[in-house]
Image (spheres, rainbow, N blue to C red):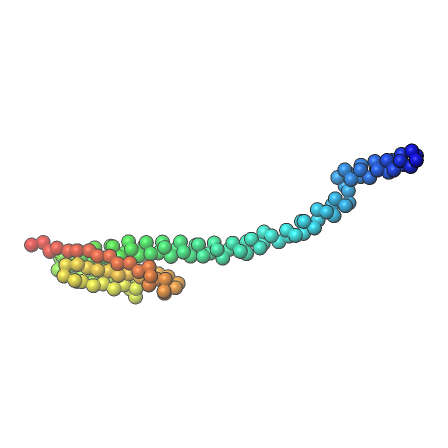
Length: 144
């Protein structure tokens, strides 16, 4: 019986040494399926992230356009008020103070000594531009 026990121990040692070897074929087979499961993961993440990044860029640019439209409307209202104070046409002065793209997107109203400019920012979507429209008002007093 002692001999059988020694032979089993002798067989165990080479198996353990083989298991610890970095070139063990069964260890490589155990790693490969986990690597295969992650193949294409970066592509999937990129495909999911690109539309979100494009949407964020579109929203940012639209908000910048709305801020720029407000600055333009302020300048146009002031130009109209100055023209009104000098006795000129406030609506014409306000429209002349705006860039060409704003021609179809602006409305100018003159109420007494007040010039009101309502401007829609440029947008690929009309509904969004309607919601982001800005209004600026300037007052004029004639020098008497």
